[in-house]
Length: 294
Image 1 (spheres, rainbow, N blue to C red):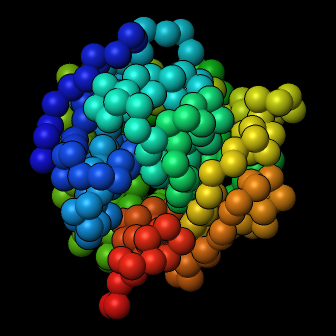
Image 2 (image 1 turned 180 degrees about the vertical axis):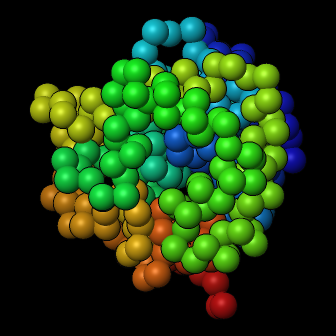
């Protein structure tokens, strides 16, 4: 594995790269507050013919913040296009995105079709004006002043408590989450020590993400989708507390070439909860020769 940084026009992006120089290029984008480490469970079971890039998005993990006032999904997409060109040249990528990373992935595919080979979106944060009830605290934290106080209170919790709160929000099976994800979450929190910009980045990103929910212009992600021609896979968890699986019904109306999988008894992070199911859905539609016999 290559663990390094890529200097872009407005950030210094930390990347992890696996199976360097393998023929098929893959870019995996984590969700709000996460890091590239979130993809570990999926990367570990992928075939070695995939050259996989898992960056920490700018302002998260060990990537420096963007020197921009706003953190719109399109800004992340433009930054990541520089990373892709730096690492892969002009070769198109199979693009994975979870939650906020899913929104960024849609913007990337729309803005850089020449760099996009396929989309695989896991509980993507695409506009839904009737969010899950359990997602309301996240939505309310976008309110100026309130969000800052909420994050201050959150930071007062012990790392163990914060990790368990995240698992409770993201996993359907709490015990499984504690078993396979808690140590990674604690490592991410340790990496953030001394990085005072994280809270500001998180709130700025969340506020700009939620603005897309009310955007009725051609810049709304669902409108962008009509111009995205690459094969697109969507994976939802039936027990997702943050992104309602009903969004699956909208996909085929907007994405020209799309397939949907709803996983029973799975929450917001299917790539961590059920990585084999995610991998095999991707293989089935793009690399049938690699479909798992498990």
